[in-house]
Length: 407
Image 1 (cartoon, rainbow, N blue to C red):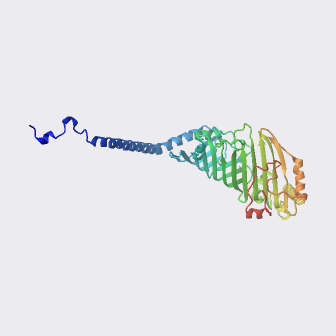
Image 2: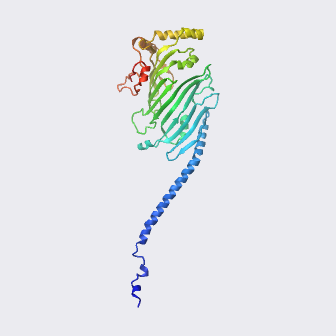
Image 3: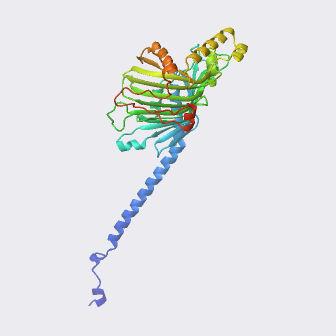
């Protein structure tokens, strides 16, 4: 007979049947496979990201250069390109677009940085759209009697180029510390009328909130004109209208007119001795039919000085300045020491604009002898009131305009 110890041993076929060891090994193996798969995925993403950071900037830079080369009128050049994969964005440095023909000494556009990115906030509204930002852009328009030496930007497929540079619909744009120059190099002294410290934005070009009002897009900008004047611009527009539909308003306060002497001498054969210039412009376009007004106001203006003009000017220029000085003196508003008028206009954006000359002359008399115009928007005839308003001026601006400007 077998020993008692051997009889009590379990049967060979049932060995491990009651042992929990295999059940514990299966979850361990699954966890091990899951961690290994996760590590492989992370390593793959890291490799793809590294390769992207290494090769994508060169690929994108070549693509941008090819896009610029399609423009037959203007040539473009760029600097380094940064790609941000996780942000869905890329940045182009040192952008420069210059005219191919003619002898224009300044580029049409230069910018320190242009950035394209996905607008993540729009995803809340179920839209995938993009935005772009321009840092320190400079835009140069050049006037010339010769078409080859002038520069307006006309003829360039700019919207198509932006669409080619970014795959998503652009919904907003931001301009930071830009400048706009209106130049002429044909006169005896080069003319440069400019806006500096230009900051602006364009919002909701794609109507991501599905608003029912037609004027869904807003445009806002502020700038300094010729180092002295404060400029504000506001606009609401319908980006889906076949014909331009918008409402815009512009206000300029406190521009020192002597800063415009290069321009006035080149095109008007006169100069300013002293004064400040305010301007208000408002325009409304419905399906391309334009109505509006412009309100130019000159304060403390001196155009003619007998002691200076008789020594420095030609005979013709002397009489021009004397005539302008006499007119502005006779028809100025004495309490405000202001010469100005309001000029209504109408027109079709596809054709000519009509200026109401008789109304402009009548408003010169109204400003002089009835009531001075203020550098503010005119009251709206609409029962809903004005759709655009400017903020109340700062204390310095109030001093410049000699009274408090109402909205």
